[in-house]
Image 1 (spheres, rainbow, N blue to C red):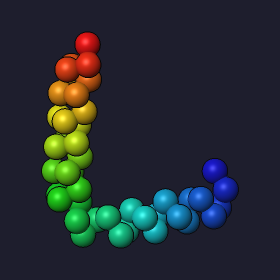
Image 2: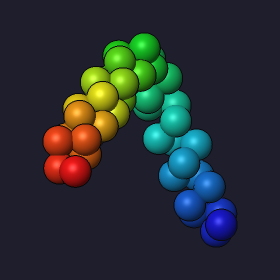
Image 3: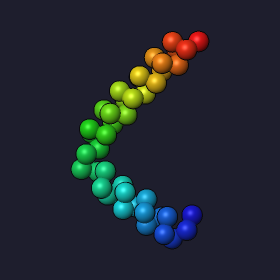
Length: 42
């Protein structure tokens, strides 16, 4: 990784930390919906 990309990842992480619980909940809902959709497409 370039130094610029490392800095971007660190900056992004700092921005997400205050909303980490909400972000985790949103990810869980998204993952469940994706699994349901994948199952329905079989």
